[in-house]
Image (cartoon, rainbow, N blue to C red):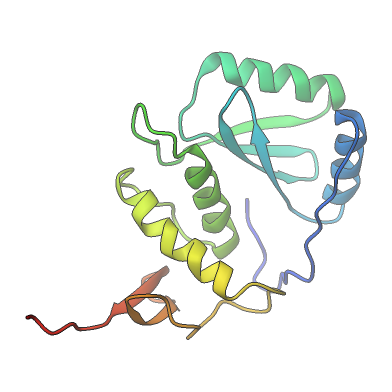
Length: 176
């Protein structure tokens, strides 16, 4: 899914809905105008869904055929014209419960237009500081940060355009 360079995030919404049909109707309305980042929870597993017009790109870090079948049945019952495309993404390690982190990694990667992390062991350690950064700099999204608030143990935390990744410069500590 391509996001245009002049695309700007102007707002984000959080809604509470009584029924799945009511929720899906709101999503269909929103996606006529823009890209919708859709966290999907199926049988104790988080999957990233990115919806644009009538296409849902699915990023699943632990793909399981039976979960995809459940997802397809539910979505096609609500929206028969929906096209579901399974996208390649980093797989989580067997037995890990980090599917939520992998879902967020997919969202960040698409939003920031960077490739996803290839090594599954590095996702949790790389994403936790990023989430901390987002917490420290919460509010309206204006632009990717060049230099931001300090993180514990770091002198600075910023988005490195050349590396297409968030980078931290660690503080030097004296050896005792």
